Length: 282
Image 1 (cartoon, rainbow, N blue to C red):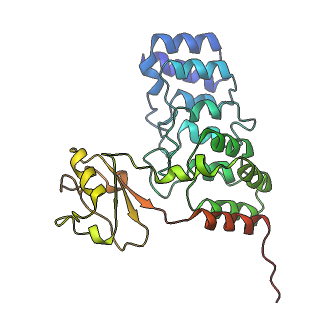
Image 2: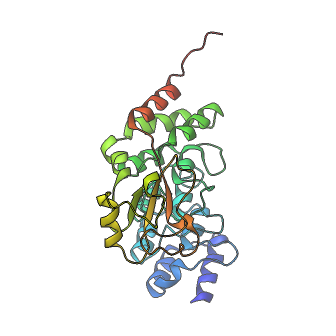
Image 3: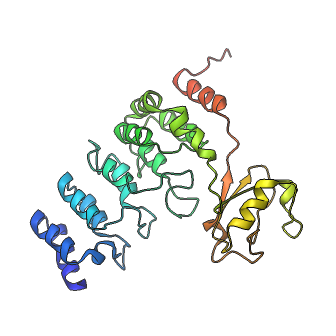
């Protein structure tokens, strides 16, 4: 299987892309579709995107066989990240297929380091900061991707730095953004997986029993595999699970996310200032 995969990848890199061969490989070796290259961490989907393959039917066949667009390479780019980039899918024909398999939540859709670019940032400015992808912005809004509270910063930078298609990306956002679909759901609570806590709950040895939701979540989830949203103004975070009382398995970054305090009117005010900058009298 590994040998066949390497042969297939080599053919793709050499421009010998035979659709029937790739589809046949997917049927015979579905587990190979998500094998990451040791040097780059890339999967077959990554390689096809980098080879500028735009065959919608081919991607559908691979996804149907189990190919995942959410596997990060060594640079923490998933296939979905690449497809959001204008350089790889300017007409946005592949990207909508890939995000259908992704959890487009504020946590960047994959468990990646916080310093890395989100799919929103890539669609706004490009992974190389050489221009955004307005159609990808529209696709994410229509799909129901949750908008992070600091998205206005990325838009503002793209306009200020005069990235190609900067104005188009802003227009695409404003024309397709829906408050209920893309904003209200960012506070969604999943019992057993989400814990919301504030400064009254920081001492996990003495949980605030007068907080009903905190208590219910603690009872529902027993394995500590939760996502903790914490108040943005807190000075420090929980170092261990408030459920098991044990240190997080692996990095705490995997479980802990910021609780973004941005309000909807504030976001709209920021976006309005980007479109119509306030005049200054010097």
